[in-house]
Each structure stands twice: as structure tokens, then as C-alpha cells.
Image (tube, rainbow, N blue to C red; front, side):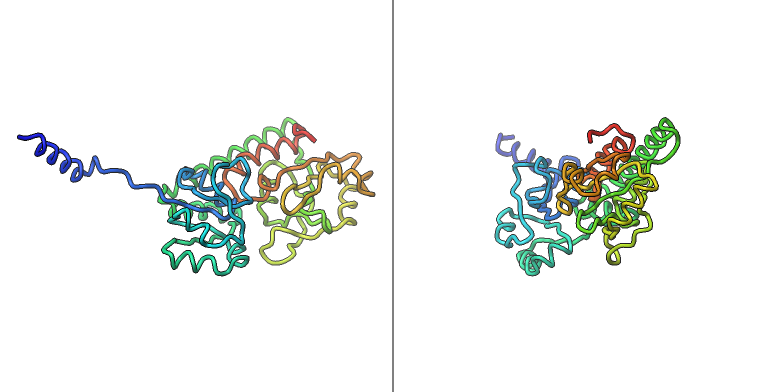
Length: 290
């Protein structure tokens, strides 16, 4: 048999043998919402990401291009994406983007941030889009929540058995707090805290924010509040120094003042849950820097 014929038969064997088939190429994914980016990473799809939102964490895949909500389709199409992940807010800010991308043959998935109870189904949906195991992320979610709950119970027992009472300042404007059904409210409870503003009513149905006001904050402080927690991020630019400079700050004398990044407290994210749960436990039980 000549060398050319031998090469032909070897090549044919490789092509026809199912056990030796070449692996499928990874999807090329652009994520225009930081929560989707975090969860793609957590599900094992980091290598699929080719573009991110400008609001993604700076240290997340820093070499990838970043896009604003107003970015034109041409800039995204230049990356030859297979899938673009967005949320309803992006569609409203850039109403023609999805249509142009879809006409160019790009799959567009618009998924709003999930609720606490709907997070497992969200992970399954995202894994299905990426072609990944739909249950591995859910198993990681359940294990993470169980681990946080177990550690929080141990810390609470060591601290005397009482859950610290917490008020979350979600925005300084009108002292909005977190709505009882929000991600932040659930995380506070999971980490062993008691949401002192659990009677707050969301500003509108489904909103994560709820008005509270200074008078009610002062009443909480008068009755006894363990932690005044300041959310820091796009929704709230307050610093601890700014809070201490407020005219009523004297009422915080016997209350621990602490800050926490919005991305770890309010973003529905598996990575954020893992990091945010530990961060929040340190805040609640006095081990975090203030």
C-alpha cells in the first residue's frame, strides 16, 4: 500500500469513527448584563464569552471588549457572536438592537434577572442556551445555600443565638431599602440576619426597592438596630464617611455601620452568592472592616 493510500484510509477512519470525532466549537457569546456574565462563568462557560457589558466587574475577563446599553449592532457583530444575552432593560434602552442582530443570524436571548425562588430555573435555562449540563449549576446553588445557612447558624450560636437586626440602605435618596421579596432581603436572612424593614412595600410590583424614610430609620435605631448596612454601587454612591456626616448620624452611635458592594448583595449571581454570603456573614457578626 502506498503512503498516499495509507494516509487516505487513516483520514477516513478518523472521520467516520464516532469515538474520535472532533469536539464541537464553543459558542461565541456576548453578555450585555453582568448577572448573565457571572452565571455563564459559574456554569463553566468562560471560554465562550467574547464580549461583556461595560457594567461588568473590571477584573472579570479584563481583555474582552465592553459594550454599553446603547452600543450599535455593528460593534457587536464584529465579534461574530452566536448568542447575545441581554435583559429587558437593555431592549428598552436600545430597541432596535435585537432585531438587527437576529436579522444577521445571531440568536438573541433576553432574560430578566431572576427572583430568589426562580434562580434554579434561570440557571437551567442559561445552561441550555450554552449547551451545558442544566443540573450542575443547580446542584452548586443548592450546596452553596446550604453551606451559608449552616455556617450562619454556627456563627449565630457562638454569638449568643440571636439574629442581628439589619437595616439595608439600598439608595440614599429617601432612604430606600430592599423589598422583602428581593434578592438582598433573602440573602440577609440566609446569612443569619433579621431584616428590620421586612414590612417595607416595594415601590412597584416586582421592584427590589422599597421606600422607608428617615423617620422610620430613626425609630429602628431607637428600638435597637445591630447593623446599618450601606449598599454601594450604581444605585447608591454613599460612602460610610458620607453617612457619618449626616445630621442624624449621632443616632448610629450604638449601631455597627458597614458597607457592601451592590454586585455581591443584590445581583442574582451564583458567583455573587458564594462571595456575598461570606462577606455578609462577616458584616453581621462583626468580622468585616467598617
